[in-house]
Length: 232
Image (cartoon, rainbow, N blue to C red; front, side, top):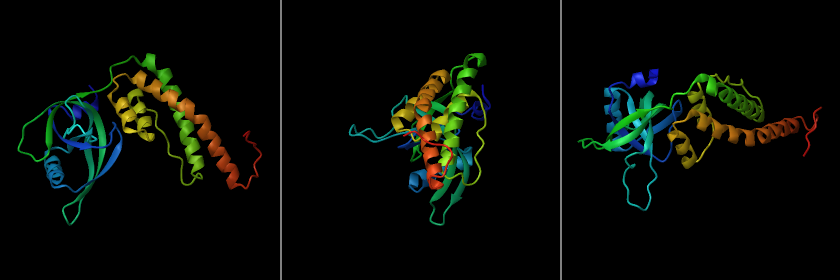
């Protein structure tokens, strides 16, 4: 069991915050809390342990008023909270670990509460995934360097920490502006290798184009005075 799961030991039920987005483990999510029921949820969460569940929910014409049982979501931990004079709040949350929504709990609370089941990726031998994780990390670093170059190299290039393969896969997922359907599919995967292979394919398709765009912009900023020529 990971340290993150240890942090949630004994928790079987969570307040559920349905949103039209997907939260990933280790992803920061700022939220503006203004509805009365979620103001109450925030008060309760802050008094009980700082955790609630974020689930993707996009209302459709099926008249479904809540995420379906079986939906995969992510536990959000409140890291910062600011209450405004009118009772609204701005909070910053961090995605911790995934869960499956098992069933809703009948409660007097104005917000949804559900029994949940936490899960992580299936165990894998380090020797079986290290090479793949390193290849994906190198591609991602190339993308980050190119993006920094395209920004004009202002400030300092952020250092990308090498981490375990599962955490790396979610770090990369959160760096891309995937649509909800794609992001949710990556969230519900339980194979780190499958997720990394998916990301490797995306990175391989994109990295050369991004690096070329970065070089073109770099040349443009020097009014074309560069020793390196770009084949267009």
